[in-house]
Figure: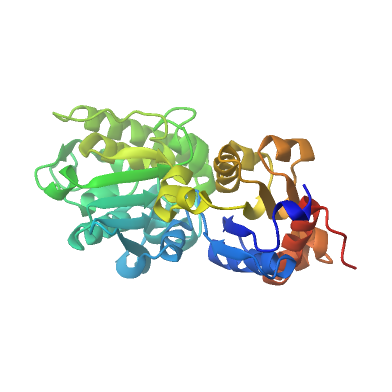
Length: 391
């Protein structure tokens, strides 16, 4: 592809995910856009920060015009946190609230240990959902990822009126471990607004609620659980599933993906009309990526590491597939590039460069990503267009 094919004033959409530990998606978009303008001073650039439905989803919504809000809620184990969420109002007046489980119940709030893995809960996330309902939201998006809990979403539902009771009729403790003593669920005070709101849960895994591939055995180890804690939490989720299944009118909830975020979707799938959606599809819809690509000449994607995991539907390659399907060429910029040229081509990416290519060291690329993002973008565009290297 030669430079004449894109002209001097190409319409370029810059849509990166975060460069974890270095740049937010919005910061990455700014850095990559600067590189595009350095290569093509006349380029018409639109920045569309992305996320895959987990951490960064609120930021992506805010970059797309949503209003940022902060609400004080219970933390994952103890204390309170000021959780960020966002409200997006459509021209029709419909209001979408965007929430991240990690904001209220995040793993970064705790020092992971078997004790915190057993005790962590999603109550604060339920408080955010309640705040969204109070704000008049008719559509609530919950990005799942980066959470500390393995409680089946029970804590969040308790913040919305569910009672989880033991044999003595008293509420059991919050957290996954508390479910081991649960004997009965009382849904009589569950917020009635949950029956009519559109509740969308963003997931990027297919794991079931419990069992060898379930929430406890696959993910709780990252949250501090040792083998004994993982076994207890799996047993707790089995008890939770039994209680949900015993409720009159319970909806199907043992679905692929119900094990995301410590099994968070399970209770909402059982007790509300909630749906599971692929994280990228949901975020792409929120930020209008498809519409942005309609008249684009080029898409620039990026993330901290383009590797084999990226091929499993992560945001940059999902965006690349969307663009390729529309005939829009794609280039990629990554902190670290670990895919072969053949793999990149197979993913619809015509050229790629990494910050490590232009930085003096890996550490410099990580610590000064904002500095090395523009020249890495220039290098990717040079490879795309066949332009001569600049000394």
